[in-house]
Image 1 (cartoon, rainbow, N blue to C red):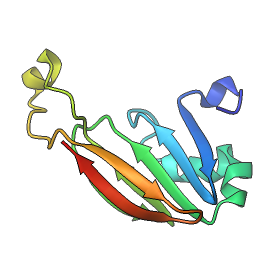
Image 2 (cartoon, one colour; image 1 turned 90 degrees about the vertical axis):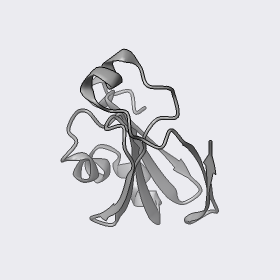
Image 3 (cartoon, one colour; image 1 turned 30 degrees about the horizontal axis):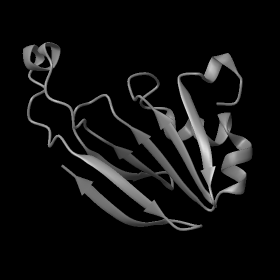
Image 4 (spheres, rainbow, N blue to C red; image 1 turned 180 degrees about the vertical axis):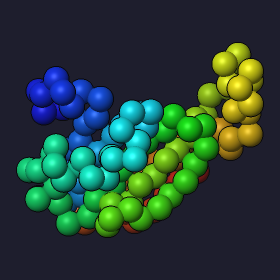
Amino acid sequence: NDGNLATDWRCAYLLGHVGIMLAHGDVAKDKLTGLFPFEYKKIFNMAKTYELHSGHFHSERFKDDRGIMWRQLGTAKPNDPYEIKNGFTTGKHLLYAFVYDDERLRCTYELS
């Protein structure tokens, strides 16, 4: 992270020229793509491609939001009592491996 306690709910890093922000997805969920360039200016300015990886919602969704590819990922773990009680039981239960070159995503592997 950047050492700022106010942003410990999120972190970001640079992989080549790909800026990747990570967030659990349960807080500031409607603001995450707007926070990335503001809270991580140096990373955002050095990147040519932008990604946001989050979870929390027990389902997957990929969308381009303001030029940032947001990959909301489910979980590969078995359902726990909370998920069963609340009906979060229909996810794919997959892990993904994302392969990047210097500037963008090149390949995605589904790991079951």
